[in-house]
Amino acid sequence: MEKIAFLGLGHMGEPMARQLLRAGHSLTVWNRTPAKTGALVAEGAVAAASPADAVRQADVVITMLAGPEAVREVADAIVPALRPGTHWVEMSTVGPDTVNELAGRVPDGVTLVDAPVMGSTDKAAAGRLGILAGGDAAAVEHVLARFGPVTRTGALGTGAALKLVVNTAVIGGVALVAEAMKLADALGLAEDTAKDALATGPLAGAVARAFATDVHFGSDLAVKDIALATEAARLPAMEAVLGHFEAAAADPDVVHEDIARAVTHIRTRRDT
Image 1 (cartoon, helix red, strand yellow):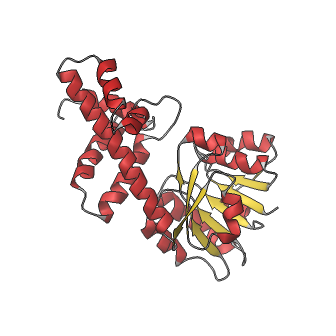
Image 2 (cartoon, helix red, strand yellow):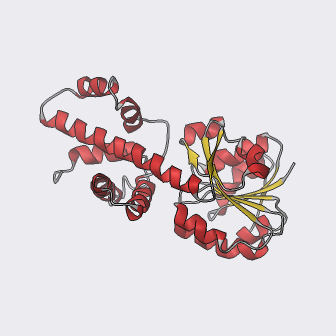
């Protein structure tokens, strides 16, 4: 099997890397906070001291990082160390502009694929994520399939573009549920009565996500994704949603918590 380097062991990255170990891949891991490599090392992975060390012998490099700036910083370190024939799979949510920027930096003989994921930590742990693969993904599709079903989206950058569309819908839906619940609160309705009614209508999926307790997608990451979307197109409704999540992310008790915590923040925010 291919030698794989996995860079970024956050809430999503660690369970995804574990899927590769379980499949028998030779796995080298790196994380900005080295202590996060411990559990995977105990299961058979090798920890690298730096991003460059992680990728030098890799056939496939996977990056799963917080956002564009983190990806650019890691790219600075790994691009000089990538060998011809290597496939770099960028799985972070960074938008197509960043993917195209990276494409202009990869050395000759290195193939870049953008393959962000649909789903949260529960699906990552179960190997049931949805993979949105843009570019020439044929040589790595069997690796990506370890994380869940793969959808080929088209040219390089289209996976990243579709991920922004999907996240915009999810985050916007959660914010809409929060506002609907805020209205229910103002009208004196019992929470369960309003929630149950919403859960039987077209917002059922958004209601489930708004009140989820077993997944994780931080409000800070929601701000990053909505900002990427509103930079790409004029989206007045999402600009309002961005304001909601920026306010939630300004609260140190909420910023890194799941977006379900932001629902409570939106419901109790006095200026909305």
